Length: 442
Image (cartoon, rainbow, N blue to C red; front, side, top):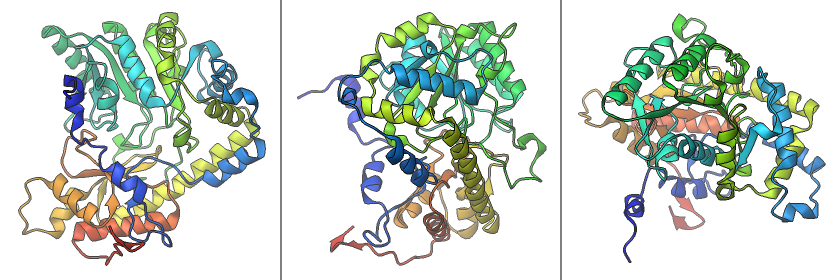
């Protein structure tokens, strides 16, 4: 039977195909020693025990949790109060400002659908979170346009100029630019945008009547960087400040500003599948998104779990502090490893779960006589041979080849094993991995 044209485009294995092999076959020292070490998926397991303890102690499931629910009334109130406390917005977030979806992936897609027509463009700077292209474009027909910055700081004022040049170029060719997306804190660079740069983007959006979509899913996963003190001054760590905390008066029509946040990163709860879209000043946007809410409906059980977490102020404050302490500790481990093995890494990081590293350059250094046409493919092949999974810069829009993202929010011994496997992969040495698992050749 023939598929639709759009379905045929997706029928071939895509970049997520490998995950279907990796995630069901993860390393376990006792049960699956030949499994994959996964340092590629942005999950934070550092605080799972604390979160589970809270859930077990406080979760009571009423019969209503087995129904369609009440439109997330309790959760929206809890989220509005929580985000007001944590993001310190100029205007307090109200429950009516918050739309709930089953993750931030559909939230991004819904915003793209709401602000842009098929063929319109949305701008994104490189490197970018690898799922943005699919989130924005796969089902909407919207064109996600990546911007290159060369030697310029992708999080500096010159990057704002590149965005304006792209808007003007699009007008010249007859394409409407509907929005631009900022990942703030940035994924994969692990940095926060300076206030002056955020203001410059807001002014840019006002000049050209372009929506600003600010993805703040790592807003509370910030930490005091213990490294890079001698790094380039242009890449020094910048404290996080939500775009909602900047008074828009005289800068931008606040109806153009929309913020995303979710439970998956700051609370290490990817499996809850909960995302929040905050659009404080656009009733039309909220009405449009509410009109398609049934396509991204959340589980009543997830709503209940999240509300119980967000309403517990004292526990949340302690949780955030301890999570940030552990993030700093594990980030320092990976940077120390990178320095020990002379692996170039992006400096100035103080947020997120990742370190952005240039493994291609290290591979070439260890294989000076090897002719390599596609360093990304060669390094990835070696990583996979050593049963270590990382996200590669090709999918993340890296401007230079050889860059990969290492996730550090994992138990220390597991992380150390992953780093050892990376070294073996780039050096081309064997770890004598056990590929016999339960009698089956993997």
